[in-house]
Image (cartoon, rainbow, N blue to C red):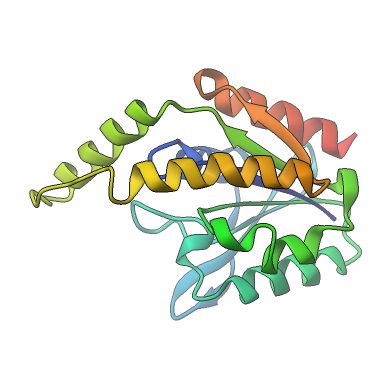
Length: 189
């Protein structure tokens, strides 16, 4: 089993890409926690394809899983399953990428790719503001308190991942789905 971790801040497009991959692969929930999906299973390139997290609400991914320890365990269990497939996962989990989850996948080498979306911070802010309005949330939003800080932390996580020896790919946000699918196909080859 191999793994692809898509990285980016809120509004960068991670969850959107995951939802498109769920559709492309015909993935359906196979494991639930508190009635929310924990793992989806489908087929991509005629091989097993798993997606971690829940996608029943507007925001999704591994940030919906109660603990990064659960994410690490799921990755380990799927890796040890003996299947020739790929696990896709996304979510902020910034501090845990080199820690909890990073320690789980650090020895996977080329079998684990971290893809970093290059979505400009202004685009992320506009998307988050639009989502808030769609949900009827009209409270003041200061992107500098959260989103801009997370954006910088994701950029720092990218540098730390490279320094830590992880396989890192930059993903052009303008063709993100095509780029991710291409990398997934290369992983299956």
